Image (cartoon, rainbow, N blue to C red):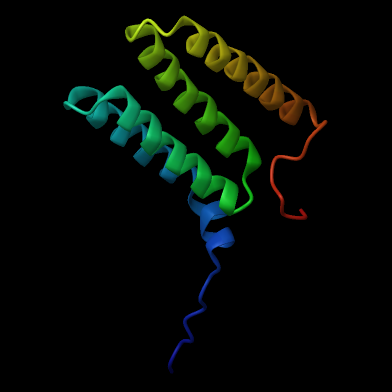
Length: 115
């Protein structure tokens, strides 16, 4: 008897493997920190992961990754003595953190999917 293979959409796969994707992300970040990649490149890679989550509708995860990418760029601005840039980046981190808090309180939705 031949069993039909059911193809799953990307949204279903993300729902099933979100924790595993996050563990892979942490592993990649540890590798990046231990290697010789610049902080701006690290921020850009984190931003790409955030865009990936945003594209598939996971607003909470994408906002968290955006905050981490902003942290990388705040460190880069501090190292280059760009205090005004660092101020605005820290301001965006604060606003992003407030968005995450509002999402967790239920004011905003965590995903764009209808549950």
